[in-house]
Image 1 (tube, helix red, strand yellow):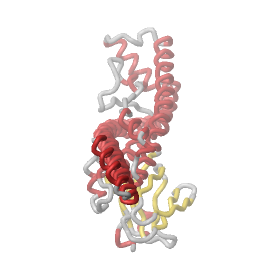
Image 2 (cartoon, rainbow, N blue to C red):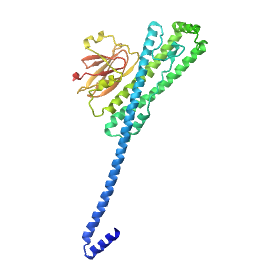
Image 3 (cartoon, rainbow, N blue to C red):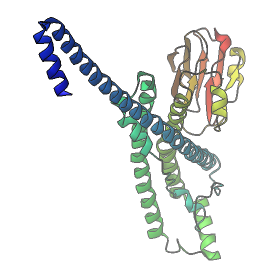
Image 4 (cartoon, rainbow, N blue to C red):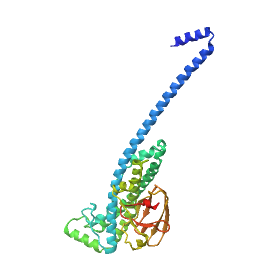
Length: 347
């Protein structure tokens, strides 16, 4: 090849056609440069495709991880609702009953001081967040919720540890105070029952422990469950219609808030929730909706605005309800495992 160009150069020079030779040489150089640039572009394209495939695989794995965590936190929250019933019964009737959800141990009602630890998966969540600089703009919304979810999982682990420490402290206190604490015979069982029903100090410690668990540990579980649901929907339905969002939530164990006319709202006996919860609110209408979270006891009124097509999470307890509009268009009361899907006719 080099000999060919050498002969051609010699021939062109001999024929005094240097200008044509220069144009030919420049053309050859440009062709080589174009070839190199095309090869680089193909390489970059392959690299981007590989990165995008990695992102899609991570998102698919994250979806399954979220499903697992939603299942775990659903179970944990149902335990929390039962514990809140137990707490209400202690405070109202000064009695303590056994639990349905498999917690507790051979010392019966002392099992109320169990730790209620629930392992949550975070490997794929962390992997997704680590891809931040490589994500496309369409994934930024999912990234926002992923970061919020990670913070709440870490925060709940802190409260879970504190609750475990308090649980161990309570068990030690009772085992030190009651020499028959671990006995399983009929006499020990009778002593335990009498102690539970008649010892005010025991009841006070149960009330303190349950309040701590419910309003920190289980409250954190409600935050994680609902953030996981929003993130899962975001990953699975990006760019698609939001029409099935309510069906998506009910399919994972959630229940719509109860809706009432404003005139009858004060006559409603609200459901007993038991502890403060995080709830999902979704506005499917084409305009902004004004919501007032009103506390029935002190009449405190907190205003929030939900943009069209937006989802929000809000904290509520038993005394709170939602009023739509400044002049009250309708009222919603929370329920256990609830969510608020605003009506489209609020346009």
